[in-house]
Length: 77
Image 1 (cartoon, rainbow, N blue to C red):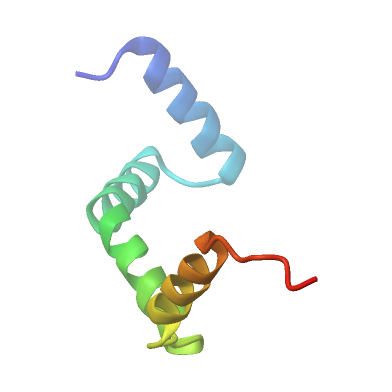
Image 2: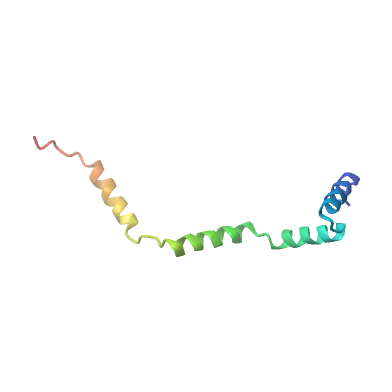
């Protein structure tokens, strides 16, 4: 059930947009049913990896740098 306050807000928005209450409710329901945050996140990840593919050697290069940095190198002087 919609509260009187919610209906008043809906009617005010519909009047300002010169649309019917039913039209606004229909649009809100359509947006609700098609809005899938998980799908949007998945699409963004796929898009980013498509534009900039993952460097296959990234993990190996990081491991090598970390290993070298942690070595107790002696001062050659």
